[in-house]
Length: 180
Image (cartoon, rainbow, N blue to C red):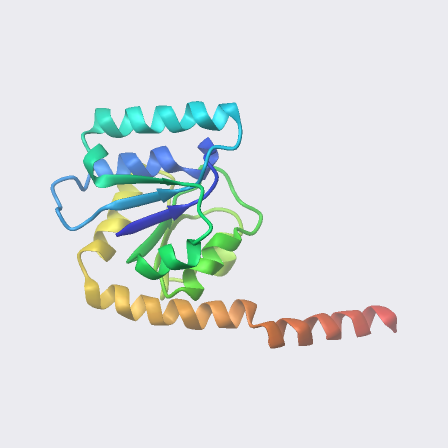
């Protein structure tokens, strides 16, 4: 199961994900869950565009539109991998860190804050192109062992990046330096 959790905004790459999944349509091993509710009229229109695109691409039967959720941790616990192929750079992208902390390998586009968070041992950073996203997904969908290995590395990476104790110590050092 491939999971994307994000707002329904074009730059979050839902359409790119659908285009990549179309390239994997012959592989019966995947289903995709797209979580995120429309909060504005433009997002409602975009959701309709995405659903129409999934129909046109012939993959609508394998896509689950989950809407706004308050159980994202449970969704991540049920998923096999996380994919958010942004079309524009996110300054940080906490959802990537949440995915790593959940033990999910990540497939994302190589831009913005995700480049500082996701390393090769826990995910694949690819160009914002359907073929590249499809290759990253295919590598992980077809290899349970690699997903498990990367999932373990993902948890370790999340702790290295956002361990509360380590972060508080770093903040304390930074504040002490400013106070001097």
